[in-house]
Length: 137
Image (cartoon, rainbow, N blue to C red; front, side, top):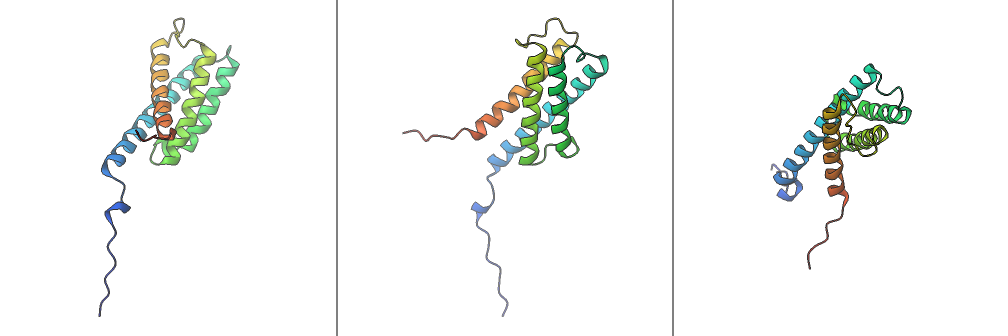
C-alpha cells in the first residue's frame, strides 16, 4: 500500500503579486547600488573626495556594504537590507558634499542628482516595508 504525500496548501506559497513586488524592489536596489558605486569610483579617482573627508568616509562605508551584496546582485532580503545600508551611507556622503543636494558646482552634478533620486527610491521602498499597515476602520 503506497502512501501519498500530503499536498501543500496554496497558502504556503507567497502570492504572485508579492513576489513581483519583491523582484521589482530588488531590481531597483541593485540599479541604485551599482550607480552609487560607479559614481563614487569615478569621483574617488578624480580626487573629488580629497577636500571632503566625511563624504569620503561615507563612500567607503557604502563600499563595505556593497561587498556584502553577493556579486553586486540583490537576490534576497539580506541583499536588500545591505543595499538599504549602502543607500543610507551614500545619501550621507552626498549630504556631506552638498547639504542641499543641489550639486550645482560639481562637474558630475547630473550623476549626483540621479544617484540621490535612486537612493531615495530605495529608502522609500524600505520605509514602506517596515511601516505597519493599519487597517481602515
